[in-house]
Amino acid sequence: MNNKKQEKIFIKTFGCQMNEYDSLKIMQLLHPEYLPADSENDADIILVNTCSIREKPENKVYSQIGTYKKIKEEKPEVIIGVCGCVAQQEKKKIFSRHPYIDFVIGPQGIYDLPDIIKKLKKGWSNICHAPQKSDFEIPTLLGPHLEEKPLKAFITIMQGCNNFCSYCIVPFVRGREISRPFEDIVKEAKHLLSQGIIDITLIGQNVNSYCGKQDDGSINFSALLRAIYGLEGLKRLRFTTSHPKDLSDDIIDCFRDIPNLCPHLHLPIQSGSDNILKKMNRKYTREHYLSIIKKLRDARPDISLTTDIIVGFPGETEEDFELTIDMLKIVKFEQLFAFKYSKRPFTLASRFEDTLREEVKSDRLNILIAIQQEIGKMKYKELVGKKIEVLVEGKSKAGENELCARTTANQIVNFNGNPELIGNLVEVTIEKAFYHSLRGSLENSELIR
Ligand code: SAH
Ligand code: SF4
Ligand code: F3S
Image (cartoon, rainbow, N blue to C red):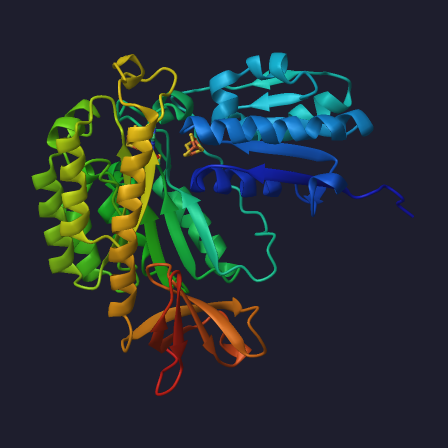
């Protein structure tokens, strides 16, 4: 009989979808030697997958790492590592701040984790592995999804970024853009669909500039969408993130032509002032942004739009800020992710004079959030009385036969229905709008797929 104890890994993930994807890949890479642990307390390996996009998330990462010191003191055999963007940024420096950390690996280094674990078990310590190769190819791992009944999944279609927005650390920690070969994406998508996944999001820092190899040349992003939307079993297709300068007419046309491409687009605007957009090196104007919005709404009138905004960028005047407010009021986004400008290492903007007081930045952030709250409420109310398509994701905690579903724009809809509907697309009539969710009813509704 094999008495070997089953070893477990716990990954604490911070940051964007790219990190979520990488965490799942690490789990798959180590499966079945290591299974997912319920918490850091029953894990043999603890890994912190980090984000350094702003100072606040970076600090959160450090305090999280700090909490593992006690575990290491009590159980020195537990292996503790750091991966993700802070790992790539800080590399060996992490060991001087937290000497009990066993290894540090960058985003490209995660695929060598089995080898690193072997070395650590042989007695190596403080291993740092943070390569950044321009010819790196993401391996296509076709492992189990490790969730009981998975419905949704991400596929990373490109890594890195070439845009060098002046405030952003991503090109420095994730390297230049590398698109995955078309065939690998198709292989991964087919594998996910065969596991029962029905909702796939193609991810990358700037998916619109995807340019992948295929047998007879290269393939751009709109062609990729057109090549995969028809794969058997794919009910919902999405992508994120888009850059306004690369959102071409042929991509916009996909919203008109592709029935299962969700009518939702996250299109970060960052600022409504041309002056600030220029300093941010965003390479578009507010006029161009508005022209894209018009084309998108012409192509898909029900499209839901969300955005990111940075307030308090160095040199942002009251007038610049008013222009950003104006954009919010004109476009009427469904949702806004607003951030206070945060100075990041290596970036061009870190050399700009930042004279705005913290208080002014906070005030501006609060003003934007308050305006967006009113717009958001109005948007939710507009849905009352409408029949909309939702994907039934599971039971809700609210009670027996209470189900929880999501619209194409990821809004939550709760309604009463048979749990057999889980995993299906149904039409519900929206009866009530709450602050962050909707109440629907199945009456006179149809099962779509
Ligand atoms: N690739 C995407 C998003 C990248 S990061 C894009 O191009 O839009 C997610 C968001 O974090 C950004 O859209 C931006 O709003 C915010 N962000 C990035 N760097 C920042 C910084 N230094 N300070 C404040 N917010 C920042
Ligand atoms: Fe950062 Fe700009 Fe690249 Fe987005 S497009 S990841 S904001 S550099
Ligand atoms: Fe953060 Fe890195 Fe993603 S900095 S937002 S985890 S690419």
